[in-house]
Image (cartoon, rainbow, N blue to C red; front, side):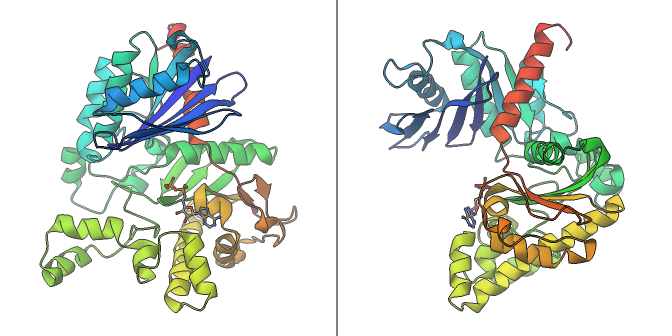
Length: 405
Ligand code: ADP
């Protein structure tokens, strides 16, 4: 069965058509600038040339139409008709407390996703727009929602509650949710598989280090803690996000900069992290590594502060699990930035980690960096959220067809 995986943002829509039997990507692409002038779609069929078309896309309906046109186009298409799409899997950022796993999308579920939109006002409404457009244009095709928060719903109250008056949790569901769950789930499962072990027998720390970044503690198969919180702003220092800080900084800056809380949050989200700490050099680790090598002290401090923060979380999660068997790096920085992995490993040596300098030069590959005698297996496991969404969609749709839901 071909499964169309959709990741819909407010002005963009990423897609992959995945063959569920071979798990190969049949085609993938991206619609950009939806709702603005100059909207375009980039479409790459497997083994074919990437093509870019400027198409007016006033809304997401038009974007989904453009995707369907590209997939079924006589020359560049990969399928003949919509009938060859067996299911659609939608990435949904926030599932609140209601969704601890993927679900078949129907009107009731869509209303529930809408109801938790207050917790993710930038993301859930955009995800819903994509869902509605797909349902309108492909009414016969079963669809699943796969939530970024779902995998972390196994966290215990001691990990997910903030030290705030309890009524805020009861009244507003104010708690830690965590994100990147699809990636933490996929990477921890794959790490165990690569070691020939069962995930249920291992204590795994997954470091998802992309532009957004989070660490999770996967204890015998269950996420028991993760670094992002109510929103993706908590936890690690990121490309442009501050991560953890003293909340009093918000009112301090409002006062000094004479600005609103919203403006300070925007600084914390978009101007902070390694971008801010490096004095504005870049949020891209390639640029920072170059600048640090050329002697820029701010870039060097930003990189080391980033590594320190990751190291602190790894130490904390090892404490929470009573030890650690596997540390897995993933996402843009985790998969590609060997020098950053080496910096982080300096902070985890006390746990019994080591990494082989030659294997650490590899980029974007599944590789075990530690030696067999090490107490902890350190590895790189490239994430594949689209494949994980396709797998979960297939499982949900098949269970639905058998009346198990
Ligand atoms: P997103 O959170 O947007 O999905 P990604 O996981 O794609 O992010 O990670 C993007 C980041 O990965 C880039 O901003 C860059 O800092 C980092 N990155 C990508 N390739 C490399 C590389 N070869 N070396 C170092 N960092 C890299």
